Length: 398
Image 1 (cartoon, rainbow, N blue to C red):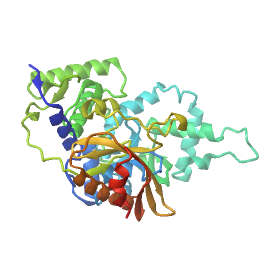
Image 2 (cartoon, rainbow, N blue to C red):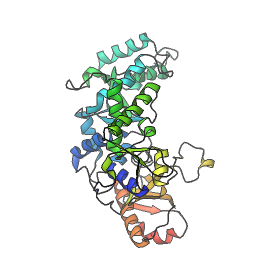
Image 3 (cartoon, rainbow, N blue to C red):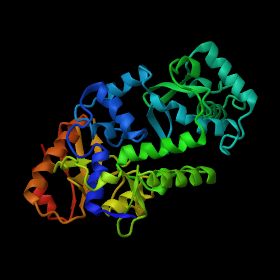
Image 4 (tube, rainbow, N blue to C red):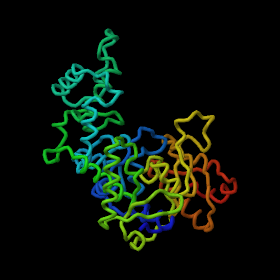
């Protein structure tokens, strides 16, 4: 029998699972960053720096005392590694073996983009790194006098990426945002389990990770950007088996697909969602599944920095705005680090906000916090929609 659940309860469960329902659910310091990563399963990396980069932003949203050096130390400690989730990401080393299926897929030649890399190309790159130590891609640039040689940028870069994706190389650190590659045996701790999981183990890991991070899941969410009819069929069966065993229940909300969650989701005590304002990264784990966020929060969101300017509706780099248990709009931001000023270029309020006085106070405080996080001393609002919010929020400039 399928159980009924309200959309509000589902939203609150999601925010609680994502660590966005209270101030510091994972604690403080470096240990909190590892706890957050292990709970969320991954944090997406992005090279855009209009505001602080996505991986730092996502962690800061859950750990107010967060500092980028905490993540750097975890990478140096080999508690965290870089690989591919649905995109480039930092993942807990605890879960390394669950990256092995993708690695083996690349090794078998199932990536069309990397198919042109030859075994000789791989041997040459590995030999250099083995002899010279960790290297960046630019170490393989061609000498100017040999512009047509094999060591042109693109072939070398592609070879490095193939060796990385198939697990022969790991990213030992980054210089700025430039990857530094080294042999796996010089990076991976000896204590890490390197047994490739069975398909059954892998599917169960995907289900468990999704349930932990969101408090509920759907088949579509578990299978997000993961291919394979065998994996899909097995995941479907495993979800049904858990329902039959009483470990999960099927919930229904009008307009949504079947939701799988703990049977006590309706009655489970969860802390009240703190009525505060948070500017979320476009790549935050809570909003990265655009279809899920539209269904759960009624928020239609897409990042527009990859669009031509003429086609943008909201702005180049809009951040979703979470207020309590609602996503009430978005704001196009830019951090001017030279002038040390965070500009809120265009604020879009898309929901009816009844407690305007409290919202204004919380928004001002959030603007100051976000400015400081971005290394800025002040926060300036340039434009609002609807326009009347400009007068209400003008005091946000600090």
